[in-house]
Amino acid sequence: VSIEVTYTAAVSGRTSGQLTLIYQEQGVPPAGATSGTITLNLAGVAPEVQVAYILPSDANVVPLAPGGRILFTPVLANNTSVTTVLIANRGSTPATVSSVELTGANFQLAGLPLLPATIEPGAEMRFGIRFQPRQSGTFSGSLTLRIGNNTSSFTLEATASSSALIYEVIRDG
Image (cartoon, rainbow, N blue to C red; front, side, top):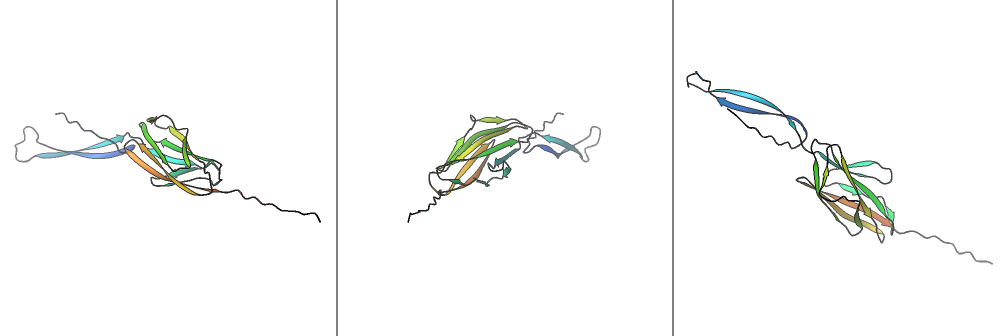
């Protein structure tokens, strides 16, 4: 007897499952079937992707959950702030980034590799989002990532201010 069991891991790591077989032993009258239980210890192989961004002010890494916010360093109008997005694969098989979409008139992608991009286990992919406002105000946009079969969206939030000019008039006399 041959039995094929297929297991598709949702995440990396160990898990266990049970396979119950009902069988009848040879030479035993068919008065009742005997059952046996086989416990399977399975090791999952799957990508395990973590998304984060790096604060330009202090280089701290901020983890992002789906639906999270990417906060940009405030800038003066007509200046630029760049935040780095980090996609890390902590799993045991490659992850594929198939699309990166950005909305918001004052936001631009920077340094994005050709897509689809494969992130090997233990590796990461980085790209920048440039915020370059032409006027003061509060601005928002969105970043949407398609990694494997999952789509995650994040909100972009940024502010820009105008420079203040202070002067003093001194008169003779």
